[in-house]
Image (cartoon, rainbow, N blue to C red; front, side, top):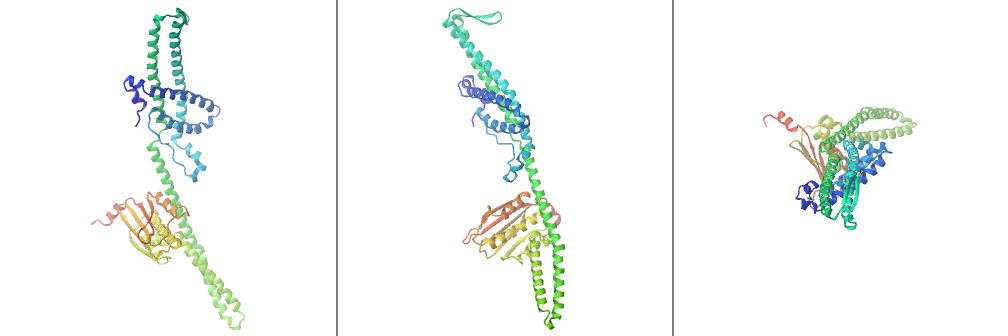
Amino acid sequence: MSATVWDEVRRLPHRFLLGTMPWRAVGYLVFSVVWALFWLLLTIPTLLLIPLWALMIGTVERRRTRWLGFAFQPSPHVRVPRSERRHWLNIRLMEPATWREVGALFSNLVFGLLSLLLVGTEITVLVLCVAFVWLPISETGRVVTLWGDVSWALTPERVPLLVLAFIVMLVVGGYANAVLAGAQASLLRLLCAPRDAELQARVEQLTAARATLVRALDEERRRIERDLHDGVQQELVALGARLAIIELEADALAGNGTADPLLRAVGTARSAADAALDSLRRTVRGLHPAVLSDRGLTAALQELAGRAPVPLHLHVEVPRLPAAAETAAYYLVTEALSNAAKHSAASAVTVHAHMEHEDLVMTVSDDGGGAVREGHGTGIAGLRERAASLGGTLTVSTTGGRRSGVLLSMRIPVPGYEERDRRANPAG
């Protein structure tokens, strides 16, 4: 790790002055002067855009302080996903880091003025020292008026004094430049640095918002399932029953031969109603099976195994869990079944589920030769998002062996499970 400007200042004078840090400090201050003048001319006519300019200030300053040996600083701003780019400005304006960078912009203006005064003074003094040394050599006895009645007789005897003043100015200026540059860089690093507490709070806020969204979607699924089950499904059942009665009545009139076309039409309508009812039931089960809410994950998976397109082997040893965890686990199995049926020649799908401390650990594997391509479709991406919203993880891998299949592994924390288990089984 390279030494910072503060480390260099604490070294022995000859090591500091003969190193590169004094020159880097001068370059830092000169840049500060130009940088401050640029932003002064830009921010005055565009006061409303100061937060945007501050974002640019932060980006540059986190890199510029490395000139003085400071370590790289990551951005304090949260990463905005591509799907939320339209809200980028609103997100940035809500972040405390943006307004700290506004403070960095104004501090740049102040330090730019100080840098101008310091560097300007140093240049003036050094030029005067060189001139005072040169003039006595070229023109003996020359008298220079400094200000008012104060004058300086430029004689060769005073040349050593001027040389000494020149050296002292170099030494004092080198340290003064380093101290001012270090103070500016330290303040900017403080203002533009990420705050662990802020990032953690932002992560918690986003996680809570994501979990709320998932819960809202699940509640909406259940509402739609209830509406379809209690509304449209019951209407289709009544329609089927009514068509059956009409079919019986038409069959009683079929003896004279005039009701045969009517009988066929009613039979066709009844078959269509039964098909629509079956399709609706499959849709309702796909939205949110009622057995999952009523009897839990184990019963829901057993019911799913009875109608699965691929044989489903269950090794599930879990109690009733929070609805969100059970829903995520259920949809993991349905997604694995769908992938096995569509994309591989799997002969079976195996499910293992158990509790490990306070985590629900679930693996679903098949023996087919297919593979999951996460960039195609939203099934796996949706499961990963659902698991993340609950503080869990989802991994996709292969089973290995002669027939390499797909292995989906999900781990979801269930806070308080061990405590509930101890209360339910005090003897254990």
